[in-house]
Length: 156
Length: 157
Image (cartoon, one colour):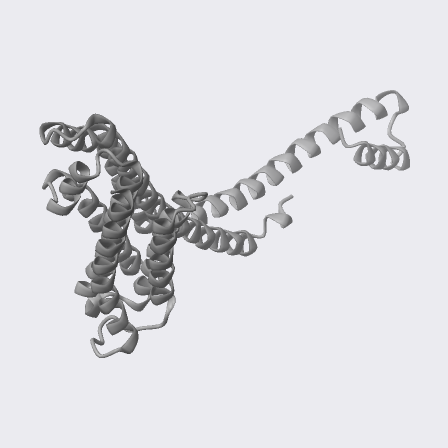
């Protein structure tokens, strides 16, 4: 990898880490309210963390998307691999969890991975895979709400 | 001492009918002087080769100076970021959660997850830098091999 690609990739990852911290410091509304809403349920709290983690991963390709036109192709490929590696952490984090909720989250994570693994051009907003990726973000938000509702209904 | 040379000199002295009483001493003395001279010549040649070798190495380091500096500086930046995260950032996040009155057990769980994600991202960055450093070392090694070839140290006396 050339120097420019390396610096671009490192910068994208650093911005990702900055986001990870700023959600706490700036008291992200969804995250903070989840901390109170589910403080009595370990399972729901774990789901809330999944939601925050999935949203953090999504932030990575939002970052990438913003830089898409200026990102060297080498950096694009390496950054994509890095994001896939980050996803793996969440995929393995809950090994042994057999709940229906985690199964749904896992499906979501797998879909996210295969979408990212696909070939696409971030700078082309008409690219089919790119559109699928954008659509997946909206779908994820709605699916998480549904998973929470189901889990809470089951509880009550 | 060079025994072969001494024998040769001794043979010459015999052929020239040099007095047997001084023949051995004379042969030893001549051998010692010639050996000393040869050693000096060898040493000079050896030093010239080593000098050439070192000169080429210095040239190589000069050529890669920027690359070495670059690798060092990005590694340093990442080390600083990691240290800052564990010394300041985590405390700041923890204080924010405390001030927001988040349950301490809940806060601890989220902090643990934050450390996991942050560290994973840092490790990925560190891996990329390592790859770059290995690439640079590989380039220097390749060039160093051609330095060895150019100087041909195998011909050293």
